Image 1 (spheres, one colour):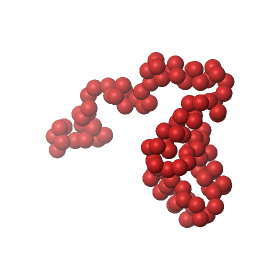
Image 2 (cartoon, rainbow, N blue to C red):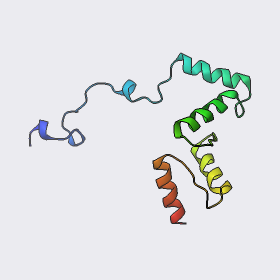
Image 3 (tube, rainbow, N blue to C red):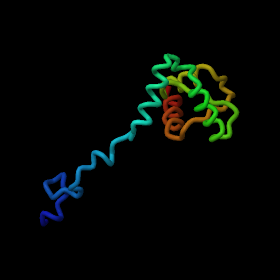
Image 4 (cartoon, rainbow, N blue to C red):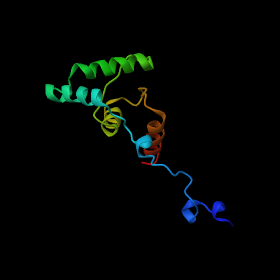
Length: 108
C-alpha cells in the first residue's frame, strides 16, 4: 500500500489540508445578531418579550398549526409536552426529536 492509499487516520496524508474552523463554526453570529440578543437581555423581560410572541406566530404560520409555545430548551419543551397534554392529543416536533422521544417512551 502506498502512502496515498493509506487513510489519514492510519498515517496517510490528510484529505483536507485547510483550516475548516470558520466553515464549521455554528452558529454563525454577526454584530446584528449580538445586538438583537442584547436588546432583549437589556429589557429584562426575556420570557414574555414581544419577540417571543413573534417567534411563536412565525412558527404557527410556518407549520400551519393553530398553536405554538416557545420553551427555553428542548428538554423543557418535551417535559411540557409529555406532562401537560392528554394522551389523545397530537404533538408536533422535529423528526429527530420525535424518534428519540418515541424510543424513550417505548422503553420505559
